[in-house]
Length: 233
Image (cartoon, rainbow, N blue to C red; front, side, top):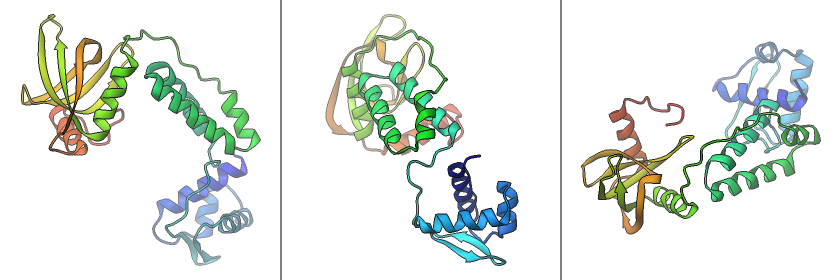
């Protein structure tokens, strides 16, 4: 474990505890000597961390301090690189560009050893069957979700039957072969899922839907039997 990783782990251990933790417990958890632990605590305090306490009494982290963005573990760097590659390959160009720009900002403040890990990440994204959804459509949908605006769709279902739908979009799911809108459908008075590649036309209305997006998502999860905080939902 590098020193940067060790300092990050120490901060995480302190965040997990709202009461003072003895130096001996922290040192054992991190697998270091007490002397090294005291040196690491002093280093974090010098960076502005509000760590209170002393040897024999325990240590507690007060709110108000976040680590600089260079404090990533190697696995976290790999996860960020893999995630950015996935977004660039699977999402629309706007999100892909945003992911690449975010990685560039992170790389700019990383120490040399971690920048090398980012540049040489060996986790790859394989080819996928792109649905062919237009960037303009995906951007419009994402904007409507973000601003909680209604959408007017002309939608073609699996039986090739077209219908107009007035929806309250609250999420956009990315699958390998399809993008799917999660929405409350005013027409059907129920939650529905709409494949983006079956949308014949879409208009963003200048009208907010009457519920908050978080409220809709919670109700949708309950309707689908999805636990709160479940991955990907």
